[in-house]
Length: 282
Length: 281
Image 1 (cartoon, rainbow over the protein chains, first blue to last red):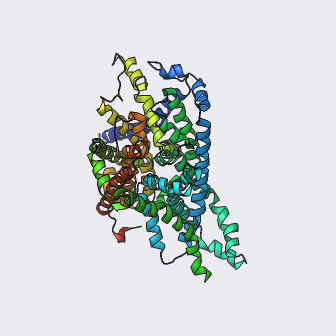
Image 2 (image 1 turned 90 degrees about the horizontal axis):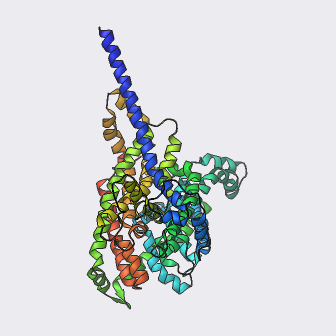
Image 3 (image 1 turned 30 degrees about the horizontal axis):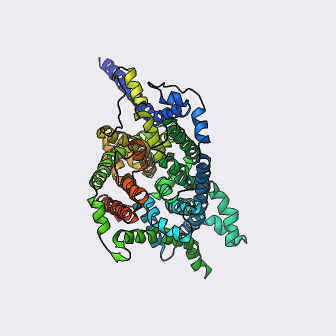
């Protein structure tokens, strides 16, 4: 008798566990669909002809036409905007790593007066709406001849990306034991040599990841780009400027062109994403 | 000697850069907002506040932040808890969930435009189901409610990923032993969540809330893409004054308003979610 009830309860608890598992998996699938479905819908529009994009009701399967994308790429100013976007993002990437990595190294290896002040300044940048910097800088740039240039905009984007570069490289260098460097010194390396031969190869993938992150920050930025460029528009600024006048298929093709590189880049840095934030929290 | 100067030399470029391109411009924008031809004045703030769009833009921005940020925090907490229970496939799911992290706000706006525009996918689906006869102008100027909803959905879709990343990283820092001990003492999953996860996650929650709230006050391109000028927000008005009306003083006044609410909310979060020094990891 008791054996039977025991078996029954065992069965029901197994049932409950199975059902719980099902709910668990279903929830995960629904959340994945929530993220992916809108991207799929954009892809349908980007891969359909202009007529299909403006048709109603719309098909939920793409027409696999390249007209929209071809029209967008051939649209006056798009090629140049694309070039500007890459150029600005490239400069931002170089500047933020070039300035940020030495600072990250210093924070991870030395104890010195003013260290906390520097960290607070870096963390403070997070409490400020940084794109607004574009407003005063617009005036400053006109005076210095930097207005409407890729470098000028890249300088603003670097303020956005630099704090991340500092914190990420700090966590990367902090993850390399000092003993490795010290061993190299005792074996006759100078400080610079030890850095080159021992530390750099170990952190290079992480540095590349944070460079990619800086690239994406700049590639995606809209407000400062729209304020600071007139002739040399980046892709985001170009799309924003024309958003009220451009036909639907142009918008969707432009959106898709914006999204694709970002997807690839995030895929490339996915391994570092969480390590970055785990440290950057503190 | 070298040992003592080296860190300063390494920090110098970044420090100089931040002084010139971060601290100085903020002083400059403050001065722009309160001066006219070198004399102090509050005229720009009066012009700003007197314009009919200002209260609308201010409250729209506030309401958006209020509607978006709490949902994002709750959703990200839920997703992060699911992540901790995943075995195989964890990396793939995490990659999918963090995809929106790489998508710009403008692109996110365009993506949701594909759904909500008049010949978009929502109308196509509804007419396919026979719910509506004619396509509805969800984003028309007379439908303020659905515009708001579309912007909220787009923002939740786009920016929950950043909160998720911060929380997952934070959960990774919580020692497993705490959970094992709690299980030994028979604590339910919910108890474990409220008594271990939430308190120990406080620094991460604080970071995420500060970051997200400030970004929510900066909402701009999503709104422009979805609603054009039908739904004024602070950042959009700043752009409008700077670019279309060519009055950088009023634009600077707007910038100071955004700055002020950002700093105010940062301070509130720093205070209410304060982590005692001895409890810091």
